[in-house]
Amino acid sequence: MSVLEKISPNEMISLEDKHGAHNYHPLPVVLAKGKGVYVWDVDGKKYYDFLSAYSAVNQGHCHPKIIGAMIAQAQTLTLTSRAFFNDKLGIYEEFITNYFGFDKVLPMNTGAEAVETAIKICRKWAYEVKGIPENEAQIIVCDGNFHGRTTTIISFSNDESARKNFGPYTAGFVKIPYDNIGALEEVLKTNKNIAGFLVEPIQGEAGVYTPATDYMMQVKNLCNSHNVLFIADEIQTGIARTGSLLSVCGDCTCQNACERQETYATPDILILGKAISGGVYPVSAVLANNAIMNVIKPGQHGSTFGGNPIAASVAIAALEVVNEEHLAQNARRLGKIFREKIGEFIKTSSIATLVRGKGLLNAIVINDEEDSDTAWNICMSLRDNGLLAKPTHGNIIRFAPPLVINEKELLDCITIIIRTLKQFEK
Image (cartoon, rainbow, N blue to C red):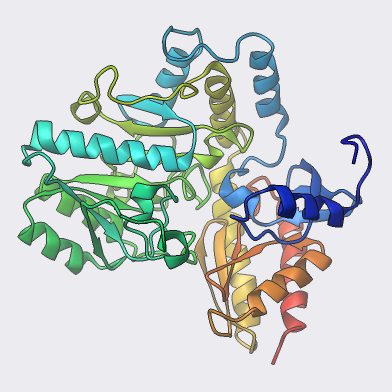
């Protein structure tokens, strides 16, 4: 088959099935175009995107400012490696550290790389600053976590599909229940080799579980009192998705260090990815202050592409869009509308039992077993009705549209979702 020959959607799916590793189970729709909150398939059918590439496309598909920054830089200089300085990286590093209120950033490419980087920084700090005996440092993590699928990360995952037959696993992690401050306090009191606590402020992949309002602040206070690093994985929940610049910010939408300090559980290490580039280019970042980040010396960690000129230019543009278009405020306001409208429907529904979330990161729990195909079938019908979403954990459907969505579009989407759910009423 000639690569120039027009082929059908089913043939495109078959090509992936034949020549690609089967590490994903996509919804059967072949997309060819995206703009704002919409995507189009190869036949020209238009859909609302309610996944946003797992919250990477918060600024909307193909945002002109972000695309413009990428094109302009790609025509000038793409990659130098870190063997040399380039004229974009320092500017970006100053921008992002000021933006989030930290001294330093270590730039990487993907979310999983950023988590691995944070783990390395935490361990090195534990040995060289805290004084834990070498190779004895432990990091606390939570049940139900999702931080990626590298060998180290799956070692502390509960997802058996990601773990089974990938051992031996990496040691050095202690698991506790999520949103259980007593469990965290107990480990910190009894284990003197704890270096850090790695946590998602909202567990997105697990089904959009939001903790108690004061959980993150209690976490921060406990970590401070035990000289343990609080590591916040905001790869999916950060960059305005939950109605604040970061989900650890409580109800604050301000830039830089929070003006409302009582609601801002400042992490010692902040992990970012996905929407830091608006879905245009792989960019991730680990931020910390000098007392922590200065443990990293030349040759101890790096990436050929980390901090490249395109990534730097794209990330600056993407973060500027978040402020210029008030995306955090929009996510907060429209998220409340989404949960109120869906909540009213659920009161009389037999197919949906719960809606939960924060900002425009939400989930609907379907009234069926986790291993059923009901949620998948609902997503297939949503696709047929012009809206794309995916199940997570079998009976939960996550809804996360681009944050550029407006109220009229959101209400249209709510109508589609309710109409579709009604087709499955028992």
